[in-house]
Amino acid sequence: MRFSIFTLAAGATLGLVAQPALAQNATLNARIAQLAMQEEPKVIAWRRDIHEHPELGNTETRTAALIAAHLKKLGLEVQTGVAHTGVVGILRSGKPGPVVALRADMDGLPITESNGLPFASKVKTTYLGQPVGVMHACGHDTHVAMLMGAAEVLSQVKAELPGTVKFIFQPAEEGSVPGMEGGAKLMVKEGVLDKPEVEAIFGVHIQAQTEVGTLAYRSGGEMASSDRFTIKVHGKGAHGAYPWNSVDPVVTAAQIVIGLQTIVSREVKLTDDAAVVTVGTINGGVRYNVIPPDVELSGTIRALNPEVQQHIWASVRRIATNIAESAGATADVNIEPYVPVTNNDPALTARMLPTLQAVAGSANVREIKPVTGGEDFSFYQQKVPGLFLFVGGMTRSQDPATAADHHTAGFRIDESGLTLGVKTLATLAINYLNANNR
Image (cartoon, one colour):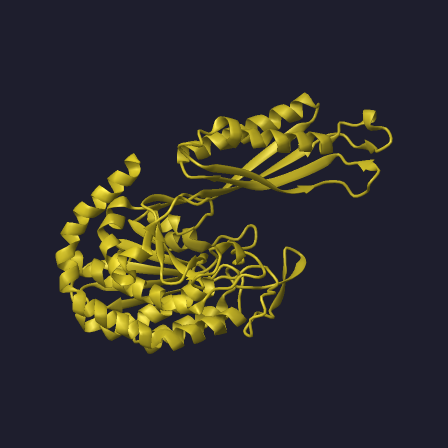
C-alpha cells in the first residue's frame, strides 16, 4: 500500500509539471496519432515479411538490410554493422536540443513454428548441433516494424522537433551462440549511446497476454536479472549392478537439484523480493546399467534485487559443493551473469506517465507487478535513464490463459495493437525532446 500511495503522489506531482508541455504539444501529438494510423498497413507488411524470414542473434543480415534501406530512404544518417548486425539511424532536426533514443530488438529464436499463420516461418537451421526451425516467437518482428513506423512518423514532423532522435535496432537480445559477444551490452560497448550522447532511452515489448490498446509499465525494477549456472558433479563410475563401487554423481546431482530449491523457499524474503532458481538440464551417462563418472546440471537464476542476486549466487555454490562433498564427490560451479535488472528510472517514468495516458487513454495504462523474465534493455539503463513498456498484443476479450506464451511454437499476436506501439514510441520521443529542450 505504501508503494502505491507513493507512486500516485509522485505521478501527480510530476504530472503537474509536465502538463503545460503536453498542452503545447497537443496539436503535434494529434498529428503523430494520425500519421501512425496512416502507417499501419506498412507496419503490418513489414512485420509479416520479417516474421516469415526470421534470423537468429548476430545473423540478422536480411533484417538489417531491410531496416537500413528504409532509414536511408527517410534521409537519416545510418550506421550498420554495429555489434555485428545492428543498425542505428540518426534523425537530426537541425535545431538545438537533447538526444533521445528509441530501441527495438531484431532476433528470432530456435523454435519450429506451429501456429498456422499464412506467413509462418519455414526457415530451418542448425543450432548447437541440432536441426531446428527459426521463429519470431517473442515478437521482435513487431518491435522492428513499430520502430520503423515511428522513424517514418518522426521524419515527417522533423521540422517541429528540437534536438535529435536515435533509432537503435539491436541484434541478439535473446543471446547468440556460446562464446560470441552480442546484444545490448556490445551495442553500449561500441558506443551506441555516444556521438551524439543520448540523454534518455525508451523501448517497448509486445505482450501476448495483454489486450490490444493497453500499455503496461512499472517504475523501478520491472524485469529480473538473469544468470546462467552450470554445476559439474565429479564422482566415480561403476557398473550399475555394483553401485557400492561408485561415487554416484547421478544421485548426488539429484540431491543438489532438491537442495537448490530451498534457496528461494527458505532464504529469500519473498514478501519483499521475488526470485527464481530453475534447473533446466541434467546430462550424464550413456547407458542404463552404467553409473557415469560425471553429471552436469545447468539452469537459470532470476532476481529483482542485486543483493538477493548475490545471496543466491553464494548459496548455489555453497549447497552444490557441500552436498557433493558429503557424498564423496566434488562439484565445480560456474555462474555467468547475463543481464541485470531492467530498472525503469522513477523520475523519467513519472515524467512520461502523462504522455502514456494521453496516447492510450488513462484507463488503458496500468502499472504492473515485476516479472521474472529478463531483458538486456537493462544495459542501456545502466548508462542513461530509460523506460521500458509492454504493448498489448492479445485480441480483445480473449482469455489470457488461452493465449500462447512467448517463446513457444504457437506464439501469435493481434496486429491491430502495433499502431499503439508506433504512436507510443514517437510521442515519447517528441514530448521528451520538447519538455527537456534547453
